[in-house]
Image (cartoon, rainbow, N blue to C red; front, side):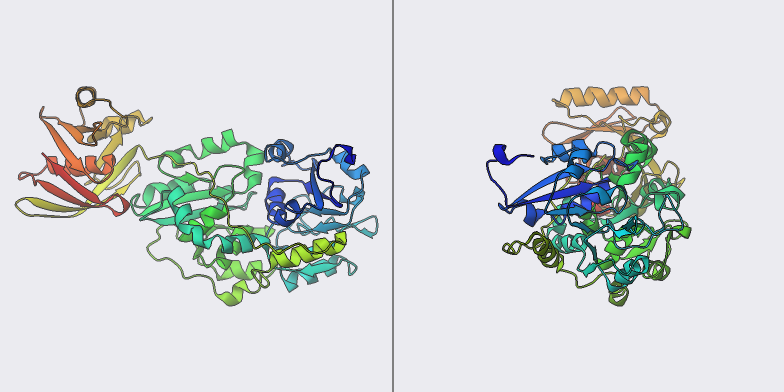
Amino acid sequence: MTGVWETVRGERRVLVVVRTPAAWGRLGDVLPSLLGDLRVQVVFTVDEGSVFAGGLGDRLRAAGAVVVPWGQACREKFDLALAASDNGELHLLNAPLVLMPHGAGYHRRAAADPTAVSGLAGLVKNGRVVPHTVVVAHERQVAALKSVDPRVRAVLTADPCLDRITASATHRHRYRRAFDADGRRMVLLCSTWGPHSLFGTDPRLAERLVSSLPADEYRVAMTLHPNVWQRHGPLQVRAWLRQASTAGLALVPPGHDWRQAMVAADVVISDHGSLTSYAAAAGKPVLLAADGGPEVVAPPLSRLLASLPRLPPDGLLDTVPTPVAASTVATIFHRPGTAAATMNTLFYRIMDLPLPDPRPAEPIPLGEVELSDPTHYRTTVRDASTSATDARLTIRRTTARDGDPGGSLSAADTTPDIALLESASAIWADFPFHSRESATAHIRSLLSRLPGARLATAKTPDGTVVAALRDGSLISATTTTTLSATTAALHWWSTQAGRPRRIEVDAGAASGGVEPR
């Protein structure tokens, strides 16, 4: 790359080597100061030797990065190179290389060589130590590096990923709103990749949890390791999770940051992946769904996993565990909050440049979440107290296909499961009608086509709910809750001999008042 075309001529050039999506996520945490420095030009290259590297170049270009081919990157000279994977041909680079782990330390056996530790296999090539410096987040990791070769130079720093989680804590309310978790306990499922992961050992766990937990009291979300998406493809993974998604699972899509979900969560269900360590350090109660089996190498991860309570076989979360002890977290992470300062000191010393003004860790931007409203609910009346005019109705709703035989099933008219639709006792129209007349005509047609339903509801343009009953009558109702919860309340109301004029619905996040007339 010649400087003749440059508008801003930097004094130093930095190469960022990206091998996998997970590595890109880690590298992005340490780049803000370098990218914002007028003295530094940052360019990227993709080491395409990984089976998980597909599409990385396009992703980097979409983010606005200057991407050079791997061969060109190896021919040119740089003042600093950064990588978050020890695999590949890093020894070919013509630059002092700073290597960092793309997770919370070196705790996992390498997939290609079960006798080696992931992250340590490529430190030495042809008798030469490849990295100029390896950045680690705890003293124990220094010992792991030295066990490979005592010549390896390590710098102890905080974990930049954890520092950004901590910096994002004040945005928790915004993240929770993005997950539609207000008024509900948010449960986050975290899965690493491989056959011993949460998703690998129990692919239907999300579906069971999201359909069995009370839908108005819990928001179940899930994040998968980038390698899961890369290896199997988003089309396949979404198909595997379709039942869970239609039952209300919130999914962090591929290529989007999982940390907003971590900050938003009230409890984390995880495995032996790095996210378990981050959840523990973030003060989250953690339940273990898979322990990694033979993939876990040694303490401190093995000690952390052994200390965590297991997810009950029935998936019930009546008792939430306490957060992990600070003494256990301290065996994994060193001096939280100092990563940016320590990293920049190292980078600029290698480049022989004065340090720029310090920049604090940046909060995680509000990211995309894949949400879908459930198209059916199974409702159980837990308590009903009535007077001459008012009623207080406490209901529990799940998205289970089967449930309490004493309960009732309601479904949206858009549900793809025809069997559920035909067996529902109440139907709500999931469509924005332009007039009361069109809404009324539609719900009457629903009752004619679905003889098992007792009533059908729709919302009119002014927000009023109109309901058609099996006996031919038509009522209106004002409501301060969702249409689906209003439908459940009106179904109960229609079965009462003395029908109250107001129903106060106690249904967790869907609580509100319904006034039939």
